[in-house]
Image (cartoon, rainbow, N blue to C red; front, side, top):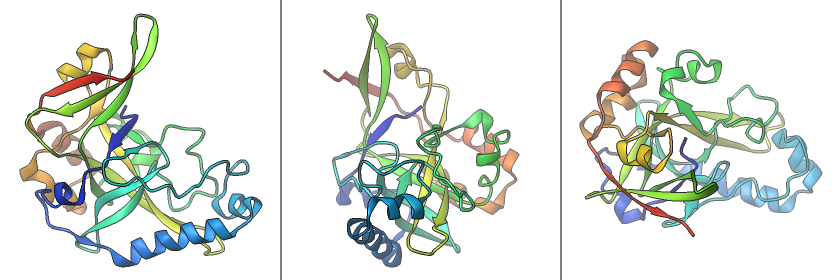
Length: 244
């Protein structure tokens, strides 16, 4: 799985090989969510967001350029909605629109295995309907080394930016207090450099010429998309750095 990743700068993001526009309404909604949270009691936040316990940290943490994104943080991502590609703040851990409770603390909902897209109920409802792209400059994994776990950073060689296909959804509280977009990143068998370090998964790096096809979600069946992602990868090699 992809434990965390690094947000690109605005300049680097602009080099993404697909056109998009910033969704002003979505970004304003996100800022409203942050203000609402700051002005609300923890019990109110727990009730509105469907949390199992009182929040210990902000539920609307946004990672900026060069910063790391962990599960349940927000980061900029591209999603196709209404036939247009939008840059929106996405929570890195999917929350389905019909979910009464936020299950992200109980289950790993930030990554979706390519080989289980058609099996898992969560992913099956999104594949072929709500596709997007998550841009980042590097990603991090936990690996075991000499009996101890350590984080390893993987950065693509000869590339300033990489992008992975995602599935997304929009959730809104029952009382309408807040709403946000969220996503899950699709992973597959590890790249050789990732496997050599000792990890068994890595993000799918979609071929640049096939991004628009992926964003046009309803142009293929769910099974067709699974085959598409397996056969349209961008050739990439990684260098890695073990974090101290």
